[in-house]
Length: 332
View 1 (cartoon, helix red, strand yellow):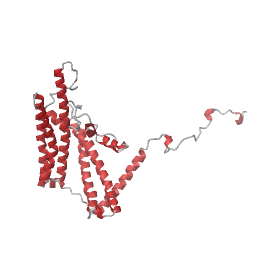
View 2 (spheres, helix red, strand yellow; view 1 turned 90 degrees about the vertical axis):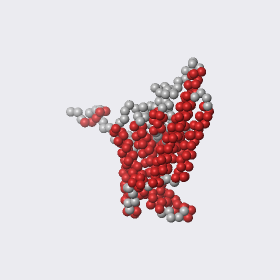
View 3 (cartoon, one colour; view 1 turned 180 degrees about the horizontal axis):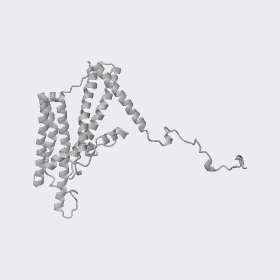
View 4 (cartoon, rainbow, N blue to C red; view 1 turned 60 degrees about the horizontal axis):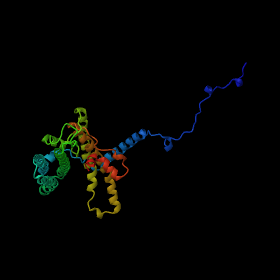
């Protein structure tokens, strides 16, 4: 008989070691990067904390949100001057278009026409200021009108500049037939782009930089549109509720000018305003740069939709401003 001690031990029969040299998962040397569970936990904590703040705010101040503001906006006559101001911007647009047509046709007096273009574009910034000062419309409507005038100003600057460069290239090609400079790589070439349809497409497109041929998508996705419209309605309503229910009660506690309060009191009020202010800012970013601009792009079949970059990974203020608003950064 063979004793147990005489039986050879094979490697396969050896138990695998229970412990080897391994770092903890939270150590930098572990190489572990999947922290999704912690992110979910933060969502839960944020939800609980936000719910507590909402309930505490309603118990303290009551329900302050006024849901009849659209009717009051329409009934208030001081709101309508802003609508008229927005409609009047078409006069500047059409005059700029007429000047571009004349510059394409005439061979003389171009300097005078260019001078009129500069005056017209400058008036886009001056006119709304004078109009608002004289008519004193609703502050929100006036703010929207000024924003639209500013956007149109930047767009017309780009529109005029690109057409000016196209005229120079076309003039060089006429004088030098061997000139191989290409005005456009797409189906639309100068001066065929000088149409009302082309101009207003650019004015509605979510970009500040004019091109003769924009990248286009093949079709309009209805599901995508419904999602963006839903986001705009829900998030805009949430912003309105946050402003009335959270920010206004804090502002109403300021019965005296800030310099009449102590430093600690001012810091305390600023910190109370910091959280709702940041929430509204983040919601505004999403509803405008993602929902609204994507909605416009989908309706116009506009292809380039890089409206923002990863500003949340920015390491300094300069990088942050370059990433969070790509349209303005590309324009500059």
